[in-house]
Amino acid sequence: MVMSIARFNCVQPGLEPVEMAARYQAFVEMAAYADEHGFAMISLEEHHGADNGWSPSPFVMAGLVFGATKNVGVSLSALLVPLHDPLRVAEDLAVLDLASGGRMTTIAGIGYRPSEYAAHGKDWAGRGALMDECIDAILKAWTGEPFEFRGVTVRVTPRPFTQPHPMLLIGGTSKVAARRAARFGLPMFPAAHLPELEAYYYEQCKEQGTQGFCMMPGADITMVHVAEDPEKAWAELGSYFLHEATTYSSWQTPDIRSAVHSHAADAASLRDESIYQVLSPDECVEEATANGLVTLHPLVGGMPIEAGWESLRLYCEQVLPRVA
Image (cartoon, rainbow, N blue to C red; front, side, top):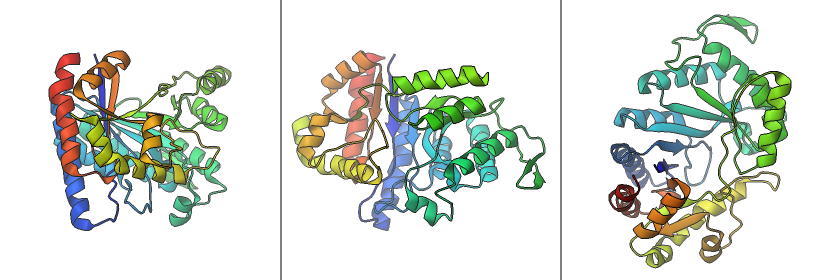
């Protein structure tokens, strides 16, 4: 059985409102179509202040998905927890969990862009302590019982549908993140294939007396676009893949590791990296059969909406029936 994931961040270079509206509406329609065809997950993310509008409101996007679907899960990878009021995060995630019947998964990230902290009035230097405070408060909030938060007794309602709490993982690629996950007894999600960090996480769980698991990307994670003529698609759409890749890499310092971090300077070198792949339906069948996982990115880099629909439909109509 192949696991199918659709990733959306609704990037729109130029930020033209009419075009952005069409993109967000297409995202909701695509999520519903993916759900109808048995996709396992819709992947969302969070960034702020991007010149292309990169996904600033993932909770809203998750709610739109749940309102349009019946079965597909939503994975938020990652929620930049220290930028938010943790009590509001607990409330919003509880409501999403209730409304979806437990289909929400959240990866809690600390972030790596000082500009986002500055824009939200948060202390970049104190982000570790803030992350710890937030995770602690969210877990206590989900019990539905009163607890002390910043010198005040508070209570958060309603309680989530999923017990003891909705799926919450700690994201990161550092030993600090692994220790944090183990200390809170939460699973870990490294942003790259890091077996040594996985081993360290399990060592820390043993030391802390907690139990958890590590959900880690494979060594060769790819974003897939399906086209009848891959050569033609690369010629027409390569600039959109490159836009996303260069935007993302421009945000990251050398110490940040990510499975989708590109070093490409042009579309040809990006193609050689294989982070973004354009496959024919037959090639996609081979990929899906070999790996058991396909991640589509139907609106990558602000590509034309029609091209995104073509990829999604080809996958659902010509790939999935052959690998189900």
